[in-house]
Amino acid sequence: MAVGDGMERMRLVLTGSQDSDQEELDELTLRLRERLLELDVDDVELNRSGDIPAGAKPVDAIAVGALVVTVAPIALRSVLDLVRTWIETRPVRTVSITLGEDSLEMEAVSSADQQRLIDAFLAARGHEAEPAGGPGD
Image 1 (cartoon, rainbow, N blue to C red):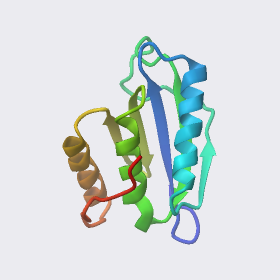
Image 2: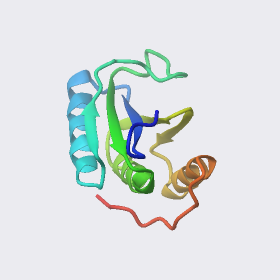
Image 3: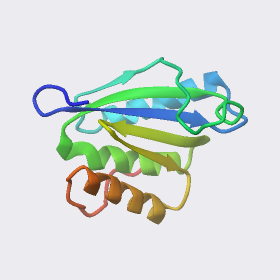
């Protein structure tokens, strides 16, 4: 999903926990958008498609919020690190990330496990594993 000037479009889909409702997930999506806009990204758009991520059971995925982030490849790690730290303290079951043909599903599991997933995701895209140390919450 490459766009002009070397920018790429990354799609983030938030899936709420079983007791989440659409209003709560919309609010969480807007908060994540605000945090992402603080980073060195080109744009963060709300995506109201309502798609349920592949593999999610409709009864488990009560509500879904989606964002499309336009970002330079050099800023991918900071976006992924922000999502990793953000999900740890929010009532979000998963954040599915799609970038081109690659996808990554982040869950509220240990930070070390998430960091390994991020490193593997970036390595698969040809980005060298840089040391973590992205934005906190």
